[in-house]
Length: 403
Image (cartoon, rainbow, N blue to C red; front, side, top):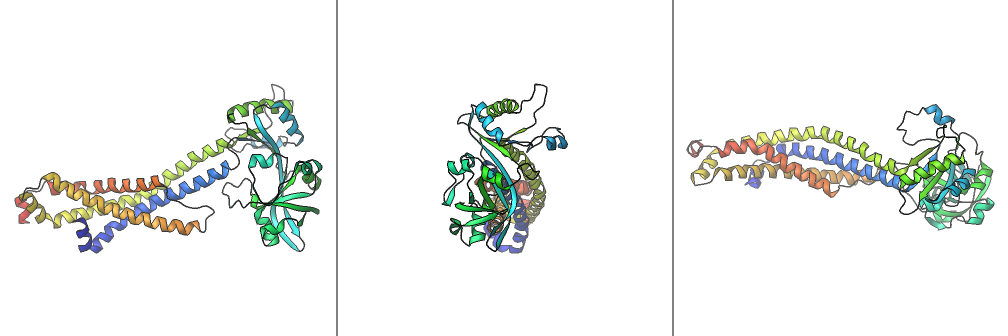
């Protein structure tokens, strides 16, 4: 009977479904977009290592009232502190040093701008889990001797040499220094939480890097990256590193820390609270359009009850119980809302395919979002039809047949 009503009153059905469709489209669209963006940022953060601590002069999440100017005056992390820290830690499996500066690369008459040149120690590739697409990574001798060799990112290789694999064996100019390319990193793709853009980077051994750049200038941003041993919590590692760094820097008990220990897990967990607030805000705003759609369905159901009053009276005269009449109209109302929700989901799916081609991350509709969508449709459908259905169920059969 619900399908028959849809066919007979096409315009009315379209208008009632349109409000529900737009409401579900807005709510599910917001949830899918926020969920996809959250997953992308968390995956980018997790790529840094879920069991790693970044030792820096800066706090990545300054949750205290520590003034900015004190961060500026803190001493930068130094390469010489790497070995001292290794001697004082037992919970760390690997520790590496990293510094970087942004420059323009040259190859013959070609130039590629805004490339991050990273000077790293030997364990960097282990902690960051770098994968080589072509060629090889630096070996121990090249790190220790400061050999003029390096690994470039996929985008750098593609832009300078046409195809990435052609970069291996070529030489580029980095601030007047000739660097032989021995490897190309696998393509990483675009990143939202862009801590390290490896596609647009060059990786050098620290000693080679120090021969090219002034490592004491204000443009550098050195860090020590520490990875915990299997089974060691980040909390325990942070406690040990705090004591070890205070020893390395010879801080007295009365002196406060002049370094920051940044737990990557905290960054990842912090995204949940941020996106939860964004999600609920978006759902509230989008939910207003769904409420308008529900009122539209309720209005249509009142009209439907009015038009079918004679049918209702005849059914009750033949023995139909009030509960059957109530159920009939509630099912019809829920069906209308579910159909509108299905159309809304289809529109979100089409939009997600279009946006995924332009955004730096794919948009997906998770299974729980689909369940939420149809649950909302059924619940709101019942709410929209409950009053008209109760009116229909309470009709006197004699009075109803006369109308």
